[in-house]
View (cartoon, rainbow, N blue to C red):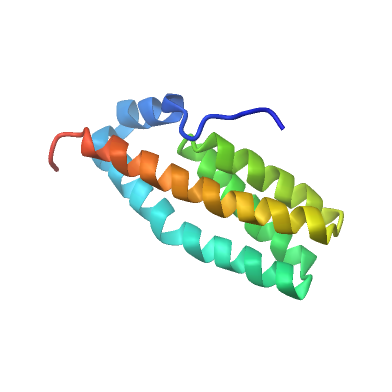
Length: 120
């Protein structure tokens, strides 16, 4: 796997240009609120070997992470989605663990970034 940055500033810069810090705050809050549920859905689907649900949840996570520039998480989610389609339990379990860690790193980076914005 290529090494992707935890947080690519490009998408954030585009969002700042479109809607300023408040848009980035809103989208980040939505991402931080919804992602733990997606990760839980991934883990539950993995335990149940529900490959369709695992694939869908991974796809959703891939897209939302990419939109905010969380490229490492997005790439892991893409790989997880592909492995779910192949119904490969061992790679899915490892990718799921890595995705959960990548989310925590992205969460921290997004919160750090927001702390640099002027107060709302």
